[in-house]
Image (cartoon, rainbow, N blue to C red; front, side, top):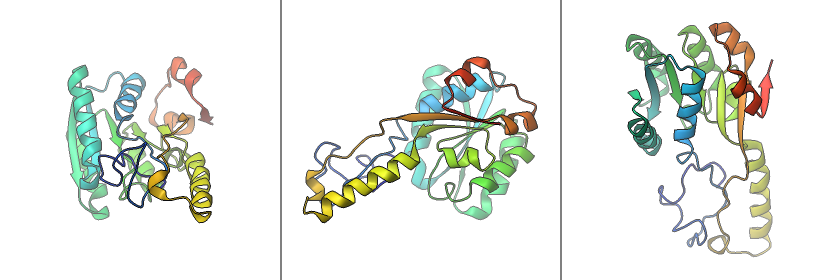
Length: 209
């Protein structure tokens, strides 16, 4: 595995150190960093009194993490759950109808394959959106914070090599990301009429101009 957000809670492995069974690989630790994404989004759009959260049922752990983080900080969220891709456009309409000032999107199976569509809908809806992974920002999205997905895939090859040489998957500890990257798209910000705080730009690992 290379793109599982929380392999223990998802039931793929017994623990990160001792996976057991026949699965190992890398964890994105996406659920654990959900609160950080919310913090960055609120720093980017402090005027957003309400943040819409776009999620699907396989991403329930994400929603629960976002809800817990918001409750702890006194922030207000609106849950927008969808079941299939045909509901995505309506979800953005629901966010604007709710007067959300920003949007949090998870990199779950329904959303990760269509970054350009999400970016275009966010721009059309005038919603500053936070994503988890860099490909969303490279496709025109505003900002992302999460594991370096390219490094994750490269590390996946190391596991394949070990297993082909005889290692048992259950004996290979699951690796957690060694780096989380912040990526900002200035073109997307300009289209939204949004000024990126200098403090955020200084912390960005990449700024797309």
